[in-house]
Amino acid sequence: PEYDAEVLTSEREIAEYFEKALSISKDAKKTSNWVKDEVLGIVNKESISISEFSVGPERIGKLVDLINRGEISGKIAKTVFEEMLQSKDDPESIVETKGLKVVRD
Image (cartoon, rainbow, N blue to C red; front, side, top):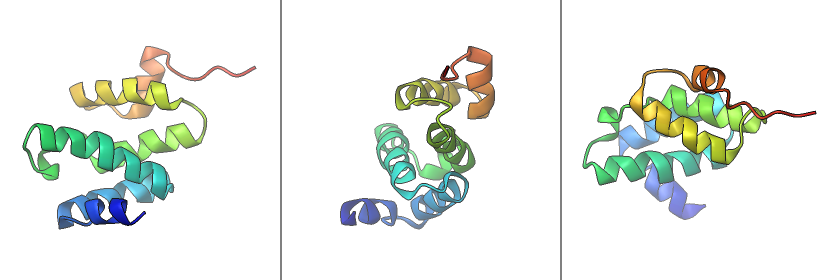
């Protein structure tokens, strides 16, 4: 949507962050939502630049990819994201360590 595009291109750093995350996730809409809502929400709240944000775009891309592969739900992703804010671990290892994988039978 136009609004998302405006937000994601408002600064070069934000656009580059989104593009890097997208290159891993391969899902423009979900990646856009995560960057726009979760990442920029914290960046704006803490009055920092996106380059100072503790979670790199690769990790956001991997998180969205886990959702798309059905390994975690959107709700679990929020929990994983909170953990990512506190550590340098990749989302995959957080999911594994915390036993957060979706179980299917």
